[in-house]
Length: 222
Length: 240
Image 1 (cartoon, rainbow over the protein chains, first blue to last red):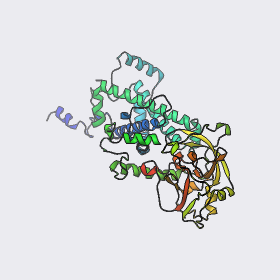
Image 2 (image 1 turned 60 degrees about the horizontal axis):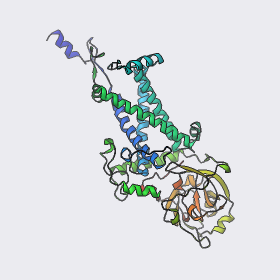
Image 3 (image 1 turned 120 degrees about the horizontal axis):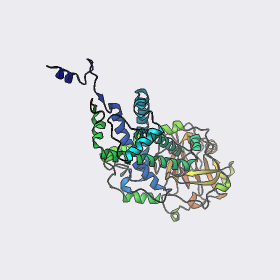
């Protein structure tokens, strides 16, 4: 057994002076990502069905894109999936702070860096760096987390305008809460579209979100 | 609700939009008599949501009240049938039948109800569909009526049956809320047929469908009796 074979054997191990390979997406993140995907899709699909019962804009969502088949089914799905979203979201926020994920991956994000990376992205000159988020990604991820929190708060205000009246008042009352809820949904849905388009453009980012993936020594800036 | 009901039937059997849910066949209360796995799951979650809402309910929190100038005019009719189908009840012979855990079960007429102290409110009715209207109702606070008939207010539910076959039930805590009234008047005049003559429940701490109209029977009970819409899949508590 020569030195190279020994090194190969130790790779991924936790002893010796060769560091363990780092996982691109650790398992808690992957689990929460897919739980969140199920919750968000259920909430948006059923939410569109609920909106269709009393639209406040001059359009309704196509039936094929809705979940629940009728208002009662849609509300039942919506108020079931919200628990999944809230539990998963609270776990994610707690994990993100405790594990240092937010600090390491999403911060800092400065206006200068966002403008620089956005300009590079528009000229298709922003390479995908495995395991590192560029400033535009950081802004979008932080933004969609904020929208998720806004969606939950405005949803609570729509659900309980009497019992949670301070929250309802804060958002401008029952009808304004519906509008804020709709705007938050729209932002999340747009994020979802951009997210899927980028995955389609750079499909190699998908497997790591399923099986984890590893940061190789020379692969970091591939 | 008529529109919803017919469109619901039209949509029966329609495939679900997203693969994430396609593993749950024929869900969403397609067939109330034959619940499937998804229905059972949704019922379980709806039961949990009933518990959460009961815990959130504060008997001292009042629903917002409004100025007379904010009343929605003309008032909006809503039922699970067309306005022409609204039941016409003969006020002279109408009696409110009482049953269950009530000390004095003698039926009540409109004149007797009007002899009790009346309270008026200008409150907002929020429909489960998402729209809302503001109206002015007056009548007998339900908690005063329950006292007048010597009802057992430690019982869990107050259930209502209506002239049009509608039925619903509410939790006792909500029944005793100061803004929960047995309304006789709407917009300053006796209730008309489409708006629930001669007696309806007005409960601004719950969604619109929890405000049964043209009530003919009231029961105080520990037995959960559900409701017309709750039995089809709407959340039973449906607090606001």
